[in-house]
Image (cartoon, rainbow, N blue to C red; front, side, top):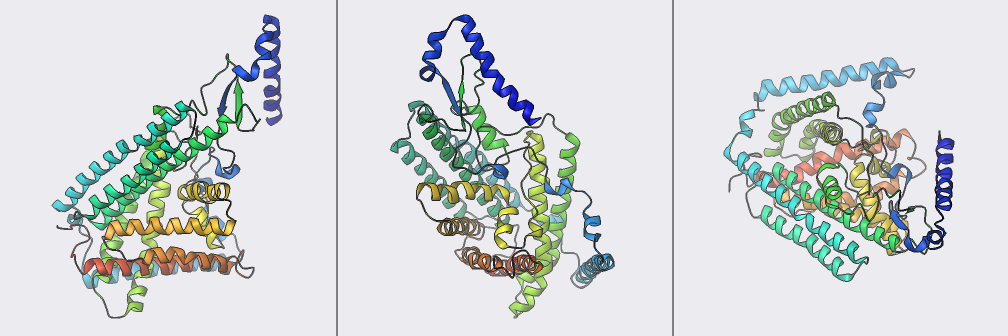
Length: 475
């Protein structure tokens, strides 16, 4: 199939040249370089292959036979026993907790006036964010119209980014807000901010390569004749319709001039994912109210004892959150807008190094960091891979801490140093005795198993010293 496609690509210019010769338009051929129209697909410095958008399924949908895979070992009986022990232990702890403390997961906790106040505020914030992001589109549009990347456009863009964080952070920080809604709004600010930067940075690189198109023949630059202009690629991609699709519809943080699209919308697939999403939220609500909040509200006097009580429900809460967001929600949203690339995560659960885990569990953020921090810092500032990696984790630590500052309205840099601590742990996991072995995978799971309850204890304990409810925060 590839040979046939390449043959057609080689034959098309020949037919076009013969048609021109038949029409006797030799003068146009002589001035071909002067009057040709060029488009740029994507900046040449960005990694291709797996990092380029393509039609692919979510990893958990590629192979539905997960249990048979786990059993395909000569210790099948022990696998069955481990599942039995896991289910029985969890069931026993849940029943015992309900018998001792009663039913804590009361849905009426979500019906207080403060919750509806936060919802109204969240709607206003998201609408304002979406409208504000169009300033980046007009900055890029003017720069493309002038055919140059000038200092003024860069100053305007960075002022818009600083203004976005200052105004919204001060607004959210100064009003009573539940940590749950604060976290959702902070992540919304980050999503729109990262999309703004990807749109601006990518188009500025495209503009630079577009200006060089007539001087150098590059693989990502296409020359179009007047009779076959498809109006795709840069600079035709800089239009209001494409920007709106990227900003509001495309479930990705990195900008491309085009994305793979599916042919139809599977309504049943959307409803199935939304139903799973609702089930995940209900189980998370139960785990939070029944098993986690009682431990977080009352200090037993032993940090180790509280940590042990939180460890199991915390890891299940995180796993459910991961499945709900990256599998159910993003796949449903992508199906609604016919977005073909469903690679929102990869098989992070099999990672034997921490750098492999960080590159697989949250692919949208990883792709943004890889493109706009790691690659661009090496390309623009000529730093080595170690410095680029350190800059990537530093930015990640700052953004994670920003979410916790807005959510809990306190500056306690536990998350910041927790992310930076991943750097030496990554070096440890890359050693020959750990990488590629089962002990490497155990290190990854141990990092997750210990990290979540510790972060919860450090942040929630300080929050409950001031407030009595996680959902209904009064002013």
